[in-house]
Image 1 (cartoon, helix red, strand yellow):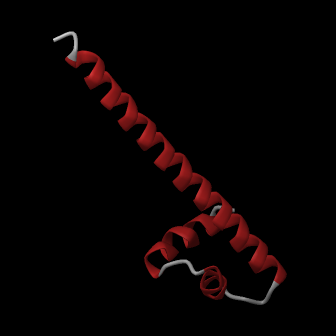
Image 2 (image 1 turned 45 degrees about the vertical axis):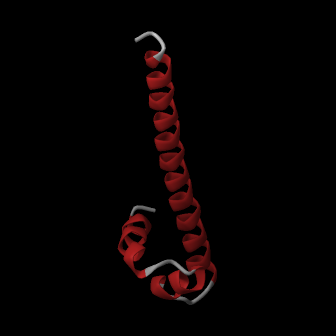
Length: 72
C-alpha cells in the first residue's frame, strides 16, 4: 500500500499541474486576443467581425470575444 500511495499522489499532482497550465494558457490567450482586437478596432475602420477575420478567430469563438469586447 505504501508503494502505491506515492504513485497515486504523483498522478494527482501531474493532473493538477496540467489543468492549471491549461487554464492559465486559455485565460492568457483570451486576454492577448482581446487586446489585439481592441488595438485593431481602434486603429482601423474594421468591424469586430473583420478584425476577427484578420486574426483568424474561429466562428465558434466569436461570441465569446464579442462579449469580452463589450466589457472593455
